[in-house]
Length: 114
Image (tube, rainbow, N blue to C red; front, side, top):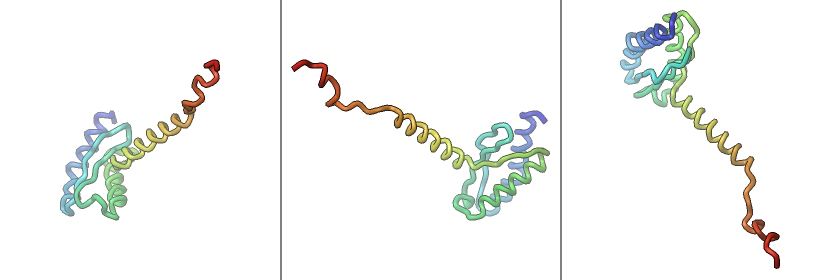
C-alpha cells in the first residue's frame, strides 16, 4: 500500500467510523498530520481530560490497523508537541551550560598598565 493510499484509508476510517462514535459522546478527533506509520491526532470536546482517552486512542489504533493491514501508532498531537518543546528547551539548556560567562572584572584588568 502506497503512503498516499495509507493516508487516505486513515482519513476514511476516522471520518466514517471513529468520529461519529466520539461525537455521540460529545467528543471529537481530527488528524493533525501523518508521518510514515505515525498518525498524530487532536482530541477535542468531551475527550479532553477524559480518563478513558488513552483507552479510546488504543481503540482508534486498533481500528486503523485493521483497516490498513499494518502497524500504526496513534499519537496525541499535544503530547508530541510538548515532547518536542521539551527537547528543544533541553538542548538550549545544554548549549547554554557549555558556554562560560565572562565577568566584567576580568576583562582588561591585567591588560591596562598601572
